[in-house]
Amino acid sequence: MKAVVHAEKIGLDGLTLTNMDVPTPAEGEVRVKLKTAGLNHRDLFVPNRHKPEDGPLILGSDGAGIVDEVGPGVEDVHVGAEVIINPGLGWKENTPAPPEGFEIVGLPFHGTFANYIIVPAENVLPKPSHLNWNEAGVLSLAALTAYRALFTRGQVKQGMNVFIPGIGSGVATFLLQFAKAVGATVYVTSRSEVKRQKALELGADVAIDSAAEDWETALNGVKMDLVIECVGAATFNKSLAQLKKGGTIVTFGSSTGDTFQFDLRSFFYGQFNLLGSTMGSGEELEQMLEFISTNNIKPVVDTMYTLDEFEAAFDRINRAEQLGKIGFIIEK
Image 1 (cartoon, helix red, strand yellow):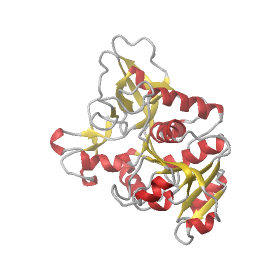
Image 2: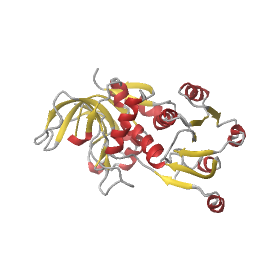
Image 3: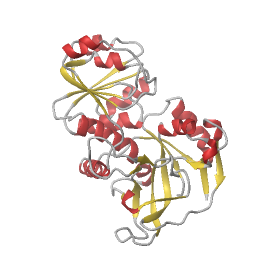
Image 4: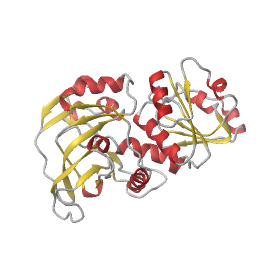
């Protein structure tokens, strides 16, 4: 089978399209013949974390396809089932934090950028009927991350003011769609006029030009109940400044840096809540799938590539040119 593999060199230079053996499911596992897969920022980081001496690794965490073989002992999943992959391994129930041993498909185990993938039977769920294959293949990781950050951690409710800096990523577009579906007022920022306009079309109430406008001036005194911060060091303090007293900021990303300084005294005087979040449990994934089905929410798909075009796909996400999700069409 064809697969996008990281091997031999640290970083993106170690990526190649190569041939791998088709795997066979063991007890409790299923094999999925993938139709589509989704590219995430995680796939930019994995080549720097995966050690060449550990052997070739197929990248990718999101995917959707058709079960074509089941291993011994699998009774609840059948050949021919149309499924999406739950990329979280070993986190079934919703708990305050992932259990020990939690991993994500695509490191350290082979991922979805290939014709086939083997996963535990509990890690496939029925493909939502309102989604096409492109939409289903790019869904799980970003939508689950958004769902936990917004609902489980942020406790979003109707009428809240929600602030999402850096609209454009798959997670950010899900945050916008989910928050609007529950009746929140949503404010977003972007340097891109195209992304701001698209955000407004998706339901954003205000889209701020982060390159030309001061956020506080643009908000005209409006303060936020909830900020979902996924950019990191470049925007965290500016995001924090938009919170009302007693408000909550949830953070799950640090693409612009892991460390920065902030004013501790103003933080505790403001009675602010700072919460971390990452991915989500299988239970939350099921809740998210029910939520998007009930509200007819579909992923915003930016561009779909073939596996042969993986370099162009990685370049687009690395440059942050996308609005929504980038994915791969593996089989038409």
